[in-house]
Length: 226
Image (tube, rainbow, N blue to C red; front, side):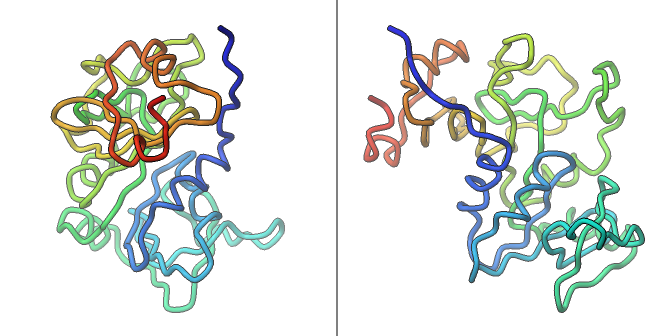
């Protein structure tokens, strides 16, 4: 049987992540795709965005021609500052991260294990950030670590694995993985399905990833495990 389904675009994936961020949350958005989440936060929900280079209260990306490159995030992208926002010393920013003051961090990854181990840096991957940067501090310091990534590499290999082969950023720190095909929880017992893109089956996703995936109560109620 041929399945017909459409992968989430980067903006659709960012919107899916933004939907789950609770009102009043303090959130760090990692370099790359996670920064798109800032553009999709629902109206009427107050989310305070943090950047490890020393910003609190970031807004969405500036309009073309309105960039101020004295105001950038950790990925050197121009950002905006909302009323009440502030910028400060790098050390103070890391103190916030390490002190458990962030509710959520959203990071990219090369690999995530079924039990939530995170690998998101490499010295040998072309185009990769050649050092872990602040990711270790975020992954362990935030109350919840979420990952945004595609299910498969460009070579068709699953990024969700039984055991990471890349250098580890943190152990059992990832709670949720938001992907182009599904949203999954990482638990001590392994992966758990939260939702799927329309047209994709639970069995097809398991075959693609090569790992067993339990069905959460939320997914079962929505018929996602069928």
